[in-house]
Length: 292
Image (cartoon, rainbow, N blue to C red; front, side, top):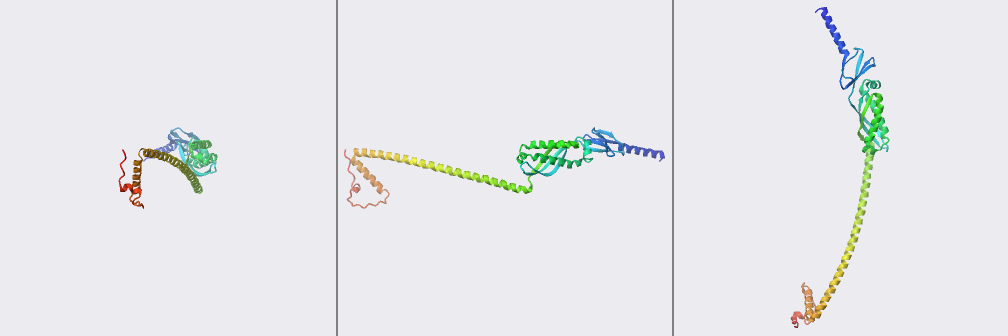
C-alpha cells in the first residue's frame, strides 16, 4: 500500500473522528446545554442535529418530561399538636436548564436533596396551621394546593416548575399510636357505657309506664266486671222474683233440684242428716204435679 493511500485513510479517519466529535442530536424529550471549560456556551431546546467544537465543548442533557421524586417520611407537628409522619411525592419539570445547571449542577438527580428540604419546609409551615381533621377531610385539597404553590415559588429559582405535591402516606408515630388507640378505646367504652345507661333508663321508664297502664286496665276491667256482675245478679234476682211470683211451687222444686245437682254432681259430697229430713224429700218421692 502506497504512502498516499495510507495518508488518505488516516485523513478520512481524522475527519470521521472530528465529525463524530462535532455532531450530536437532541431528541424531542431533551434539552441541552453546550458547555466549554465549565462555562455554558449556549442552551439548545430545539430537537435535531447540532454541532459543537470537538474536544473543547461538552453536551449536558436534561429531560423535558415530567419527573417524579418520592421523598422520605418527615415528622410534622400539626396545629392541634398532633404528630404525623408524612411521605410525599413531587412531580416537576426542568423548565430552565441554564438556571438548573448553575444552581444544582450537571447531575439532575442532585435536585432530590434540594427538593426534599423545600417540600419539608413547606409541609411544616402549612400543616402547622391546620388540624388533623383538616388533613383527613375534603379540606386536604386546599392544604396541598397551598404547599404546591409555596414549593413551586421556591423552586423557580432552580429552573424547576413544580406541577404537583401529594401526600402518599400519613402515619402516626409509633410511640403515639398505642396512646391514641387506648384513648379511642376509652372513648368508645365511655360512649357504650352511656348508651347502656340510657337504654337501662329507657327500659325502666317503659316498664313503669307499662305497669301503670296494666294496673289501670286491670282496675278498669275489675270495676266493669263488678258492675256487670252486679247488674247480672240484680237481673237474675228480678227474674227469680218474677218466676217465684208466677209459680212458687215450681220455683221451690227447681231450686231444690238445682241444689241436688250442685251438691251431688262430683260424687264426693257428704251430708249428715236424718232420713226424714225435708231437704231429701224429692229423692224419696217425686214432686207433686203442678196445679193447672
